[in-house]
Length: 110
Image (cartoon, rainbow, N blue to C red; front, side, top):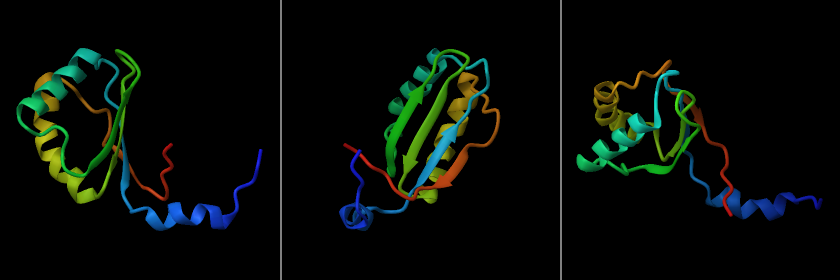
């Protein structure tokens, strides 16, 4: 495996912007149908895809669903949460804990 020099990584580092990674862990009873209904309602309300959401990944299956997102800023994520939380409650999705939020240092894409 070839090593990557610091200078070859430099353009990526110069181009990156700061952002946050958000990881949701819904309760063990959450289904993909509830997830799909949440997205449908967000779309219907004109709230999907929200401003500042760079990437959204849902993985797993019924009872083991996880959602990870990359946001441009905490403020944009918080603003979206005002629209998301009532819908989650209405479709019966209970988050087992507050989302895990981490500052992003770097992102590589193909």
